[in-house]
Amino acid sequence: MKVAVLGKVDQKGLSFLKENEFKVIEIENFEIQNLKEQLKDVDGILLRTTRLDKEILQHCDNLKIISRHGVGYDNVDLDFLNENKIALCITSTSNAVSVAEHVLSFFIYLTKNLSLSDSLVKEGNFEKRSELPNFFELYKKKVLIIGFGRIGKEVAKRCLGFDMEVYVYDPFLDNEIIIRNQCIPIEKNQGLTIADFITIHLPLNGDTKNFISQTELNLMRKNSILVNTSRGGIVNENDLCIALDSKKIQGAGMDVFVSEPPESNHPFFKLDNILLTPHNAALTLECRERMSLEASQNIVFFLNNMSELNVENLVNKKYL
Ligand code: NAD
Image (cartoon, rainbow, N blue to C red; front, top):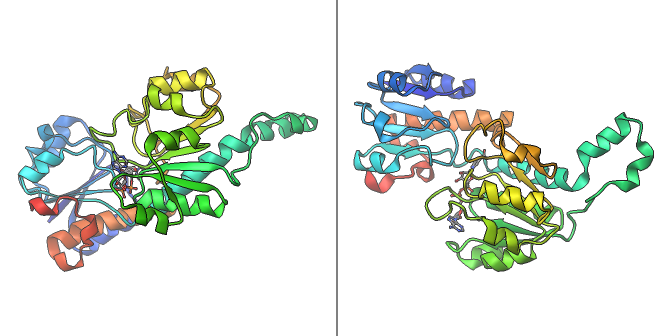
């Protein structure tokens, strides 16, 4: 059987596919015409972030499974997959820890003046060390976690480790689950009003687009810090720029953007109270290895031995 791997992935997954006698083609040219030609006869696709819409998918005559290298699947036409009984899998056990550590890195960086402190020492301004602005502890601060799935729960554990008060907004979960995880359930607007830190862990869909816009930013405290490692578009970028520029909120950390990479003149780039990372929250070495292997296992198990597949990874099982 033949598998197309779209984008670079760790060798571990590629080896697993080959050991199981799958023919692997690695594709780096994502132009639509090339994809239509190369994907025509593949049985499976291991997919990073390339968009796969109906326009391309309808040319895949043999396709039985798409396995995402990650957990978000807003880059795939899920309706088309469901209508055509093509499986969609994710790597549900691979990336929560890596993203959660990234969130805490944003919190620390944005409250500890790491970059400014480094410059003070290197530029011979050691004696100015008491003058740094916005230098805070996480201890006893309130954090609001929006979306309490795999990643939200890992973020909560780490915040509790810093002795933060952890509030959770996730109306799709029983409050019991939130309380069992030593967190406090709260409504969206109330949470936004009281939180010092807000971190978002939602899927991108019609309900979550612009989930944080001007109205929500206006509710936030002046000292608050907003972090988004979920998907671009869940936070309205223009509204966030205005809030940061006018110091309506203290700072933000963004790993994801509406357009990736962002335009070279993106207004975020002029702000000194935002930290940007290139959608790499899940790209630690360990996580890349896990995602590559889990995504490959999904394909091999789905096509060869269903009993070994982690059913939690199969997004659209009811359509198959
Ligand atoms: P998950 O499905 O385990 O959790 C999502 C949670 O959001 C669920 O508990 C759900 O009930 C909740 N939710 C859904 N809609 C909501 C709404 N309207 N209001 C409040 N809560 C809502 O997903 P996860 O594994 O925690 O990942 C979350 C997102 O993070 C993914 O969808 C993906 O887009 C993104 N992600 C980004 C990176 C990165 O590299 N930056 C890596 C992994 C995942």
